[in-house]
Image 1 (cartoon, rainbow over the protein chains, first blue to last red):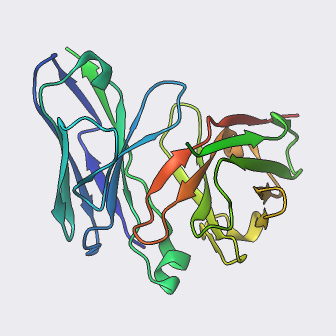
Image 2: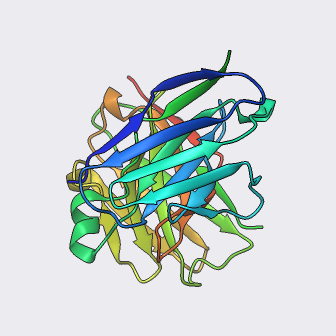
Length: 114
Length: 119
């Protein structure tokens, strides 16, 4: 199975700061890595897919990078609405791989106002 | 704008079967995307449950596979999830989502439905 390690689990920052969240996988997943934002009581929202592609409608202060086993989500110039939880998700599949591992999520990062 | 809406009972007794339906609006369920279920226990992270293609090809989380059944009803533009022999550990918010077939990202989500397992 592909193991995922997301860090940090929580993070405090101020409006205007830049923050980085990291996701590491136990196996090479190429660029099959997505990032989601979730606010309390709401469904997750897709931010980044394919490691670095910005989903339509998502502000450009969100960016993703990485390939293989190491990935990052960077939020530059934090806005009040960015304080939320963030999850990475690996979706690397072959027919067999999907059957074995599925679309695993990271443990999540809670971004709080300092 | 694609819309998804989960429906089903909010309370299920232990050992019984949890049944949920996701109704899709403004997009044909047969138009090439996959469709999935994800759950989130209260205060915890996200867990992928299963993904289905309109042809019926299904991928299940191995840890849940023995209890899972997923199906598509293209005539109603709906897909469904059944989870048998539930316990308190299955208490969660259950989300349905549209899944892009190439990269696997979940781009549209339902609002979620809280299912509590309790006698």
